[in-house]
Length: 259
Image 1 (tube, helix red, strand yellow):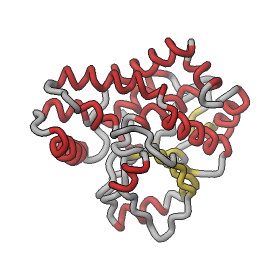
Image 2 (spheres, rainbow, N blue to C red; image 1 turned 180 degrees about the vertical axis):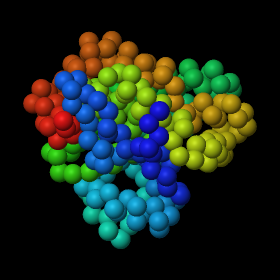
Image 3 (spheres, rainbow, N blue to C red; image 1 turned 120 degrees about the horizontal axis):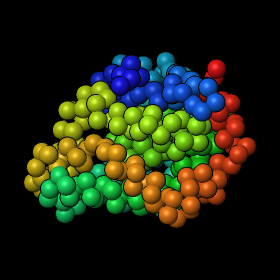
């Protein structure tokens, strides 16, 4: 597992570079250009300085308005990126919070998360942000960061679709998706998420919290199956729904790959 792509920060979970993977045709995604993470409300001053050094041009925030109000992102003195976010709600709750409602067992949590992932590609506010994400990356203006609350579900779907669009092998895309389960201080992230889930829903056992705060191959498979059932293929979904036609895919490859 390529752990060197993880950027260890004090108060921001799951911050990592999701470039560097080989793509079809012998090229490779660039490093130092594409970053993903969870929310930044507890970012330390050192974290903010580290992010400023990345030279971000775009921050694509999949959270809704209420999430942004509850967890406002701290910004460094040198922050000058364009922040792209939906002016409204992208979900009633963050997916892991939504999935926790009524869940009593770890297997129930898995089933709930699979349902969430099947529904994500049909949520128009999420798709609106997704279109902006692809459009920003296709412009090739520089480095970008994509994130949501935990940096694993809405962000995970976006990154998986971007990987598909530029020709990353599905096994490598899955490896990046699953890196959430070990990136950075995973125990601190699970504990923080567990506190929030229990504050809303009451007593939930540790194994179930761990499922809700992690990812599993079944989730990404569920998303892909739902897209294929509704649109025929991921390629058709990208073109017809997310406005990633052949020309935009070529622009993405031009700006995001090398070699």
